[in-house]
Length: 480
Image (cartoon, rainbow, N blue to C red):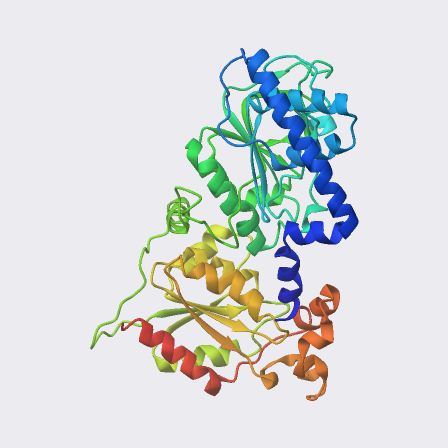
């Protein structure tokens, strides 16, 4: 399971386990007693607010629950306060819950805030001022919070490359800057920091989440990009222009205070190259159709062969100039041609439209595990992907990143795990070396050791005789 096991175990750690490790038996008992006291005050204050101080303000603007983070901060503050301050705090929170500005969606993958009402963005200080209906002093119960608007919430390595933004409620003691640019449309703030530039993460962390978040606006939404990289915008300009009618604002560079009627901070991500239809009106099939429309791709379905059909399925062998490349791609192409494929060998580059057209013209794509396989998103329905899994214990990552997502894309999946002698690592290590026999024991979840040995130094020389049954299976799938 290799490095994937190390990563996934961390992600799957529950909050209960964290709490259990954070508090000893005595402290947990003490915490329970304190929580009981707080709950009692909450009940009393709830009655006090609604019996003697009815809410007379406007009807709530937001329809979802208040933020989990805010509730955790409020509970922590209450545990450390005196009895009188707790009552004030809890009464304020009860009023606040009826006016809570953000609609907050958070899971292990992403953190997104949907805020409506006049929103003011002061980019020089990385601050977003959000509305508060009645200018009463609830600063103790409604504290500012921070967000890094990138959809890989628990990945510290990625999030350290993302600019942090402060969100400040406009309560009575907050100095709110004056608007210098007013907008009449909604806005979405997201980052192209993190792992942007890796083709897989471009789609899994940014493009698909941006599609999910912005599609309901039908183009009438303003994109605000933090950590902007001009080359990234150029690479995906066609997609960005198909999701928003308006020129992108490089928000980090703005001197003005931009004001919007609403903002979504951060993007919603369901999984790796995935859209969960139970959480969205859209599907990954809808997204693929969006890509076909964006890049004017002609083929909606792969070839289907009948008895006596002389057509040849088209096979794309994805090549790479650097690491994890096929050292015998010509031999692979000749073998596939002899079996009845039309073969093309090509490498992906910054020209997304050009390569999307190549992929869409093919019925089968094969490549070594890596970001280049993300281009299967451009394949027609019913096509086949062959993932060549190199040495290094990457089976679980290969499954999570590509095999599982393909089930919802109507793309058939085949896998070829190379043998030890098909890896160029045999040029660096003897055949009985632990790096070849037990990769996990060799790298022990050390990312740098894993990357150096298995990603940076490894190429593949396919044993075409051993590989033939996989090609034959791909052919058979087009006759079904």
